Length: 65
Image (cartoon, rainbow, N blue to C red; front, top):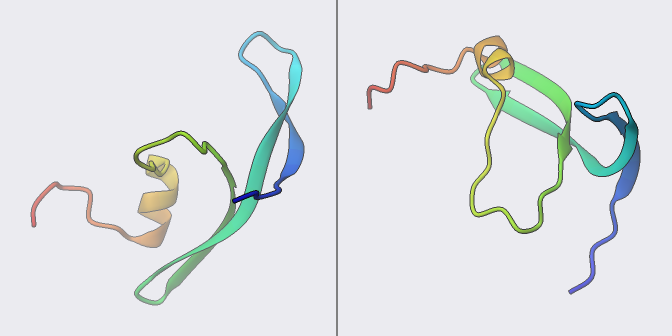
């Protein structure tokens, strides 16, 4: 399967600009919504969300189930 993604300029830690594949995603939790660009990693086995975005959505980050 072939998938095409838009490549956007992104700053690297060394200060250079690199092109990376990003998609616009929309997260929902209860009555909150967050729209954010996400980096595509086609070889990843899991996904992660920045702590700032999780707290904006009101997610429980205490680790309790």
